[in-house]
Length: 590
Image (tube, rainbow, N blue to C red):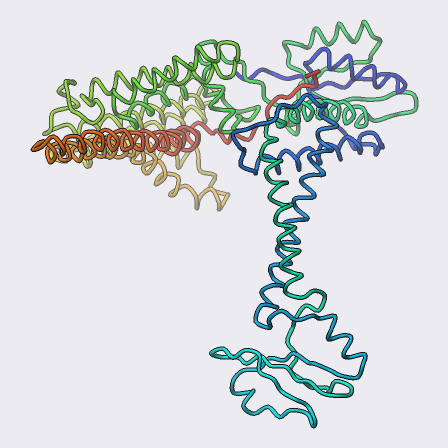
């Protein structure tokens, strides 16, 4: 469930702001809402250090690490300075190499000449102008009086040539754009030097990936310091009094009040107004807690005033995972990996939670795969409802549509109990009637086309739509009237969209069967001789491992794309969930 929040206003002496912030951080329950931050030198210094850390960590992470890694015991601040200097030097070397490479490309057609020598000749009254023209323009070119034209290079379309003579250089010559600071040999020498320096720096940085752990620890420390300073600087001062605003969970409100009495703070706790946007703290039951890593991975949080759908999301996500992977053999692979993960991350709560979630998904996948009779693409066993070739596809589609009407109707039931007003009750029951009507329509048209459509379909859809037109549509609002037909259409398309569970699961199964067929053909072709078997067996094993690994990866992608979408889009739309919340992040000492 979503824990209720209290909006707090805390008053303390301006002279004890730092002490108050430290005490609140020790409590670890208050999320501070900063006002206009006072500009202070120490906070700006810490902010600059954070930017520097982001730049160095990002730059170091972008470099491919080597197998040989250095071990770092240097303090984070010192290490940051060293690596920042190396990254800046590597970036400067890279930019200079790019610049020198462009200079070389411009100088190469002219050969190795000395720009300094040309400047000396110009001072002595002799000019040498390097020019470029197209072939047609060069044929019509007339050299200045007394000048000598020497062709340097002729290509398909251009002519490079030098015009030399005594006296000042004439105006109007088609001068080529050429660097005049270094000769080609000097550019090549400088390029080799900088390339060697750049390679050495890149190698040093590639060996420094072990510093990332030290830098991230230092970053956490600096981030903690910045939060303290921002909290201090965000307090509004009224003479000798400083005021802090924020939110605290109702479960910690009494503890905060005790601290306020103990330290002499003024404290006001009140319910958030409709304009306030309190942070969201999810208090999940123990059996739903494994879902938390998935929500954190997706970066989604329900709004403070929205419905927490964590439990139904876990149930349906488990079913979707099993149907999309659709293979008991793959489920066993996931189960083995997740059980190892539970053991490996036994001292890491987040890792253990994520592994526990995959254990749940894996058990469901094994159960569904056994029922569907699929083991690494080989059909074996299973129940007749899901394996009979004559009725299997229709039955699977029926299961998909049944899941659709169950989950989407559950969403409207959640909205019904959220507000027990007669108008809302009628609207949500009407939506459920429409959903059931569309469900029966989809089953008879798509899953079992030979079955007669029930007579009640038109009454369910008709009566449900009529009730919605009366109790939902705001006839004075043009937008509400215009959107209503699309809402009805979306209701039908949302029901149909669950057929993706059947389509993706079936395609994965067919791919696995095709892979197995390819390997069987390879084994059959090599059966005639010992040499053929020696070639066919390792090739076949390699192909089957690569193919099934690819199919497993595609199955996981399908879960992220389709399983997550059905929960966070279709189901969320029908439960009125926008995922607009912000995570509760209290001020605390990390």
